[in-house]
Image (cartoon, rainbow, N blue to C red; front, side):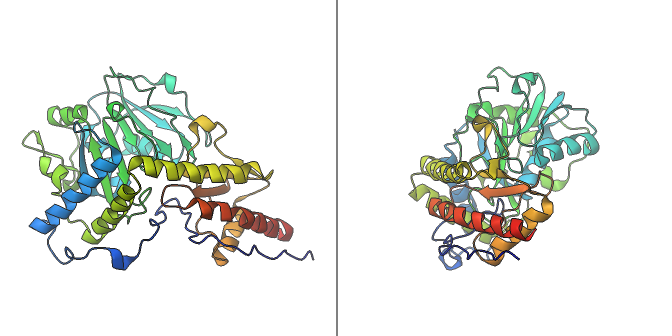
Length: 378
């Protein structure tokens, strides 16, 4: 039997590489969260003030223009995107782009739940559909950054200014990591648990003026659950976008998000967050380039994610990846780096801003050790 080599001497200080929920910001600790609002009503003056403060910070960090509203809604990114689909789709034909599991999920809901007949433009994991095929007389659903495939749209240039339909962007792995052109986006959704490392359960819904116009001029043919209702007496429920949430939020999760947003502000805002994510992705790129057994699932660098980076592993199947990831977790060297269950067998390493580049760099030798260990024992 071949003797396994000793593990590397240096571990990542924070081995949190999960693609959701993601690593907490550096320096985070539960005792650092403000707790004055806990046990108080979210509709109290203090509760509304903290919710509005979280919204104001998100607007500032995203560099979101005044033309766009931002609200905290139930159900994480999934709830926010479902809310947008259920309240606005049906007025025009729909085109859905799908190149990974979440995009496919929106296709399923459009067809099976809403009874629509969308035009679906697909690509395999690791590739991007031909964006030039999109008919912008339709409403268009897409993920800005495919969390489970590591493939993203390169920019917003493919979205025309004179579009007739609405652009619906599931941006949960993209916000705070890319400079998103908000004039191209009518609806965007995300959750705190991705790029901010926040807690799950809460979504964020961003509406441009064309989306508001749709909400106020169109009534869907299907009934809407209470948690999806954004219109009252034919007008947008403006309170939702001023901290008056539809249902009761976790104020502890709100304070956790505020901590992350204040941390981001201390970095210099969006530019600081982008710089950290860029540095992390570059560090992982170097690791991949130096190893013949590692590769990027997203072959084209122009559409390769710099947050949820998906890697191929030579000779790997699902069992080998599970063993490799389990070995690293047992050594407390890397947590939760196996690829998504529906994706090709491989690794997925979060490189968003809450991860430190030094920890990505320290991961390289551990990947070597784990791969050698599982292939020798296979």
